Length: 113
Image (cartoon, rainbow, N blue to C red; front, top):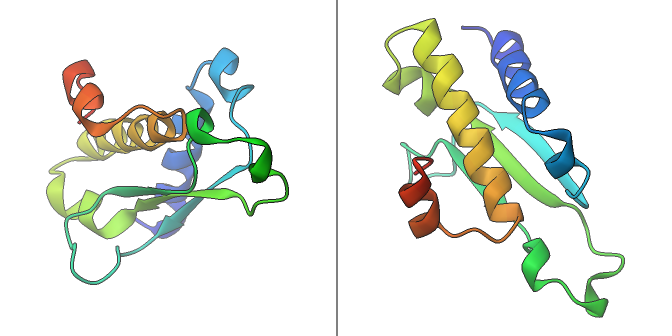
């Protein structure tokens, strides 16, 4: 799958997030990279920033939080296009949940681990 097609899947996954939630997202940017940082070759996505639940008055003027979805590991773990679509959506939801302050344990309980 080309990078452009994968980027479209990430965009479509973002479009499926309910508007009630996307309106609450604040100062966050979403990126697609081919590979994760060295040392974690199976990482599908990464949230870097300060969750909404931890922001205070000091947060004003901060650089945007960053959500990165990694194409290479996703394609390697999936056997079909349908698997890639499903895994991309799970990854996008998982990383956005971190933006809202939801931890990995709770995400696993909800089926987004």
